[in-house]
Image (cartoon, rainbow, N blue to C red; front, top):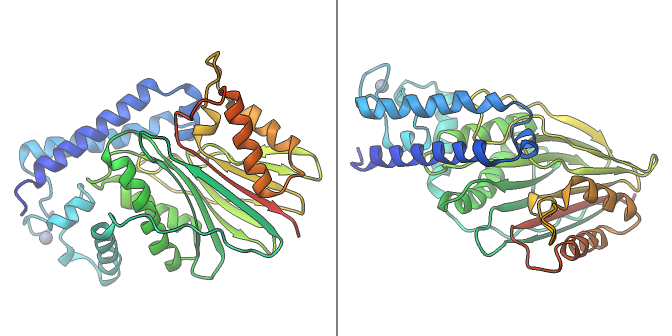
Length: 339
Ligand SMILES: [Zn+2]
């Protein structure tokens, strides 16, 4: 067993506990409501697991197999510090799944692959992403499910440290590896949470809006894991609505059972995905841009094309902040139904 593994697990768990406590102590109630999906107590079971694992490190019982009392594989423990059964005792199916996840956690540091905007008949798509100087924690991408339907994702890594940047690049690898293996949005989201929650290389958490878009039917199935709610403008009513969180952010909840919600987009409807760098940008009077200003902006500019909408939001938010450089990363994705 790698000699430094236990100190590394210990460091990682302390870091995560620190990040969580800082978040709970400093986040506004609105941020908490979004990120935790209105279930503040969701973090406690996770903190309990962290504490009991730290205790096991002290007792030298962490990573001891419950079946044969040997130490479980180091790689397994890096991926899941609560692992307490060796690979040998797994069923063939469980073994296959775990092996592919183990493999994935080894290759995770590869660089971000280029994101390309897909060409979908009857859909106008545009995206913009700019990291701030400090740390790039925003991410968006398009990918495909097993049956070929279009997937899209926008995510925002909370917390600080090296793991925040690494999480973003790894999320792309994880998504592009796991999505083609399934047709189920909930299964994909559950696997993502399982992959990150006990991995000692990731000590933070990430808000993820994950969707599956059937452009022919205009159906958008989504799971919002603690991410700022995308704005959906309906042309027929002239009103906007929010695609609110339906599960806490990834890496926070031990008990994580996402269920997809669904909306239908018709011609002229506009969907805007964004990260909190937009809504939390301040003006010179220390007021936040906020969700309502953004929603009004979408409604007033719903006649624009997707690239024009992205441009309009950038200009408006920038003007709001007195044209100062953005303090946080900003990311925008717009989808407009044209056909
Ligand atoms: Zn064993």
